[in-house]
Amino acid sequence: MKKILLFVGVLLSGVSVSQTAANFNTNDCASTNHDLFTELNSGKVVVITWVMPCVNCVGGATSAQNAVNSFSASNPGQVVHYIADDYGNSTCATVTSWCATYSLTPNAVFTSSAVSMSPYASAGMPKVIVLGGTNHNVFYNVNGSGNISVSGIQSAISNALATVGMKENNGNSFQTKLSPNPVNNELTFTFKLAEKLTIEIYSVLGQKVKSIENVTGSEVKINTESLCNGSYFARISDGQNSETIKFLIAH
Image (cartoon, rainbow, N blue to C red; front, top):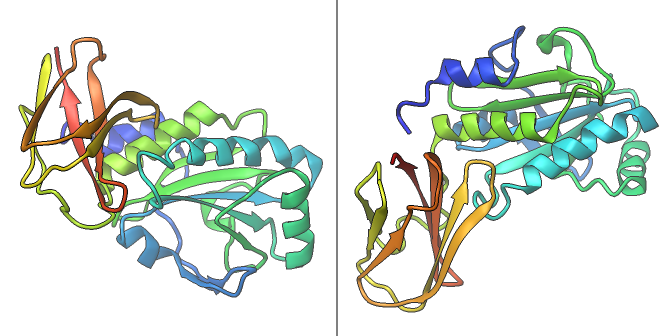
C-alpha cells in the first residue's frame, strides 16, 4: 500500500486545478456543525456535489451517491457524501425536497455560501470533488453529469483512502495480524480471541470478493490465488465490534 503514491492518485482522478481543499465551518440543513478540515483530519473522505438544483444535476449527484455507497460495507462511516447548493442562495427546504424527489440521500445538505465552489476553479452544474487526507488533498474535480462517473469517483475515493488509512470502528478489537503482506497465494489471519467471527475481503472499489463466516480459534488461512494483484481491505467482525486492515496481493 505504501507504494501507492499520493501524486499518482491525484493524476489518476483527473485533478488539474486545485490540489488542496479550502476549509469551511458551517451548519448543514439539519443544524449540525461541520468543520471540513477536522473531518478530513479524522480520516474521513468527503465527496461534495454542488447542484443548482436542477434536473441536469441529477446524473452527477446520483453517480456520487452510488460511488460513496459502494464503500459503505468496507469503510463504514468513513466516506461521506455532501450535497451543496451552487451559490448558497436556495433554501434548505428547496434542496432537501429536490434530493427527496430524485431519491438522493446525502449525509448532509448545505445551503450556506461557506461551502463554495470558488476554490476549485470553474463552477459546474453539477460539480463533484473528492477530498481526503491530513494534507486536505483534492483527488477528483469534475464538472457536468456527462463527465462525472461512478468509476472515476470510486478510483478517487480509493486513492484518498490509501493515504489516510482505514478507520477501525472499535479499535484493534481482535488484535488481528495478517501475514505475509504482501501476500502471494495464502493469507494467514491470527487473533488474540476469535469466536464466530466473520472475515470479508473487499477490493479498493468496495466490492466484496471473499467472505468466511463462523471463524473460531486463533488462526485462519484464506486462499488468495483467484484474486488479482492489487490492494484489498479485510474487515473482521463479530456483529458488534469490527476492525479493517489493508493488505496487498502480489502474485
